[in-house]
Image 1 (cartoon, rainbow, N blue to C red):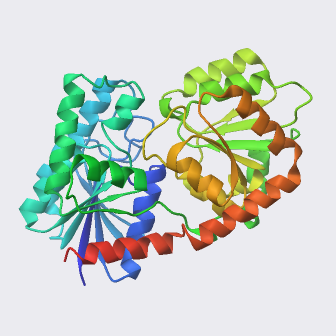
Image 2 (cartoon, rainbow, N blue to C red; image 1 turned 90 degrees about the horizontal axis):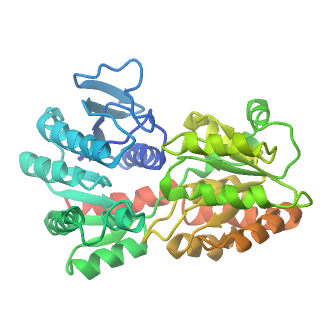
Length: 403
């Protein structure tokens, strides 16, 4: 029975897309005959504080489902570029120094971003004398440049770009969650063995049957339709511009926005909502991941937003909304847009187009038949194209070529 070691700073009980994806894929790979261990950080995302009940100074072992987990110390941070950089580097160092305590794997799967985790993956692959797969969920430093966090001609960006290319060359294989990512990798490092392994969803965990009283009470009794955003409240999501549009909607247009989550911009978003005094927007605390299916089942529309073009980015919220049978209001372009429009499972608006966003909101708020049609098409797409079983089978086949 082959052994797989997953190296990632993000893992449950933290909430988030990479956490859910890696845990669910690891669990599915066990069904394919793998023994799976995760080398990860003490949980701190997105609060930037080590979760209660975990000692900050020493590694610990856990079992989550059927996955063995070794958690190593990390400097926790979620605000400020330099502090986040220090956090990424601290996990890389801890993983490299303490990862030898893991059982010897036959293959290593290393998650990026953060890109620096690839250094730990490379080091451990050499330590264990085994092949390794580098999985790219977002292109770094490209995404940081597109978000304005790094200047393209800066020393940091050039250094990160050189590290990125070096890791591609040294990995035995690379996977990317979108064709845009894989194409970018091939263009910059020709000859890289790269393959698309999309994100996915467990369709049985989502759908209208999961609605419950707790979710209804949390969303509130005010008139709908309810447009729900559940996830990270961060820079890349462009939620400030979404609020600009929602606050400007005329009273004759129905619908209200419910934001559920935490992150670096939560305080500023809360201040704006309080100052507006509008009953059209409600901000709720982050909820356990197990509550997301019920929240989506309670909503009429799932809002998925990227504030700008991020090459290769496909938010995982798209797949969960599809599986829930809920129409999507997507603010994005690129491959994310093509996946929603292909189904079609929602209405797509380009980032930075407030008039189009207001028009799409009004259509979805006033046309229940349109919402139902888009939701049904999304559910079909989730079952046939993006089920976790299908993506795990693709990953299993790729990993076995490395044995």
